[in-house]
Length: 361
Image (cartoon, rainbow, N blue to C red):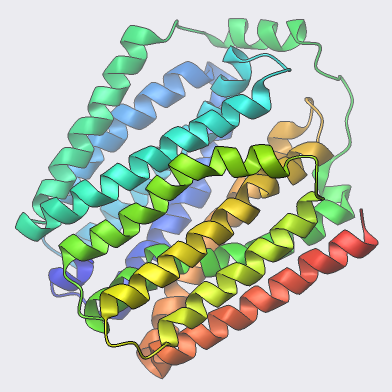
């Protein structure tokens, strides 16, 4: 939305999001490497503090080239936080409550997303540059809170803790796990579709449905808040009662339906946007938590980092493909055709999950 408001074209907006995805891919890889070398604690601090500085700088750029360069380094620094944070969660939790710990972090992220999109929509309706100052300052504050609240852990303590938790000394490689690799392919297709929510969907709300920044933020806020209030309940009710892949299959098909709803010719653009976001939110709650559970169930404590790295990098690759591809299709063929194509990809991915469920449990 900032790109469109600043006079850049829709394809340039897609490039900006794709560049962010490229930086995320590099950041996820480097974050894991550096965390093993110097420890997760300091990687988290520098990612938060450095990301805050780069957010403020990003708001001061005056050309698309400088904007794109800053976006790349911002995403690289920000994404390095994820593998370090995953290592931190494993360190501070016990083997018995690791899964619950990750779920609580996801809950916190979605509360932040829900509130952040609402505040972001309000700030954007006043001045887009306020977004960069607020994002930068909150990130720097988070870095300071990390230093003040969390006990410091160096790389020696980090490795000692892994030994105390009896991590397996031997484990298979995810690159030889054919079931996981098939799953990763279908997950890539799923994520390509999912990332339309953050690239083409807000632009469609603005240009085709006529919503202003405030209402776009309010509708997107519904996604995060519903997940925050209901996802843990849904996970608790469904966990252990149904196969992970079966739940992911239904979630993927429902996400395809959410994009088809955008083609319904209702009089109210707000109603179309609300119905679609509600449907994709239900799909997200039904499928995405169990994607994490599926790959974790196939890994061990010794190789979980490798599985997590491939999983995270697949999402980053999908952000690049989905963001640029979606905006490109929208520019060439229109949004109606884009939503048909995205729904078709969801159908392919859902069929793949179902095939994996039936034949490769």
